[in-house]
Image (spheres, helix red, strand yellow):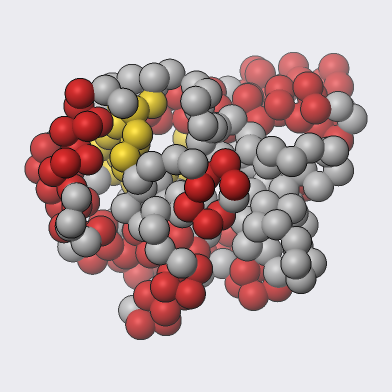
Length: 239
């Protein structure tokens, strides 16, 4: 962990999420951002940021393959809080080239093709969204996957050269749901239909009772690591 990340960890220890976010917005001023995919956890953090008027830029990755339910939550969130959610799209030329040469569903064919699609639609836009910032807020929780249990609530992102902070890292899913209910926060109704983790529509399905939290992501791949490249452990950027 870098000296800056270690300093942030010490400064935020013992603070609740809102107190920590407030402190970080004071430390990093206009160089702090929050990435949302409008899932349960992200809606909790959006509420914390917007309802407290914290100067933290909120952005999302518009891959062009999202569920209709996701777009509804996105729009409803902006209506309720009256705040902008900045959209980052993939580069048109890269999408055109990939689809023209491999077709619109190449990601089903090989792991390499799927990672190429994630790279174009998510990782490259994320790089642009994070550029020039010093702190990245996320909705990661420890219990979401085995990979995330070995992370920390404060990390140093070597690939993007910034501090990552997960304000509700230690929260349980029940705590998240209780918070949403308490503050009547809009959320993606796909969660009620067996979708604990929601990404692009072609790459996400509902999970069955007893299945892993991320079993519904890229379910056709024979792999235990269900990450796309945004939030990886000891990798450049993996989610």
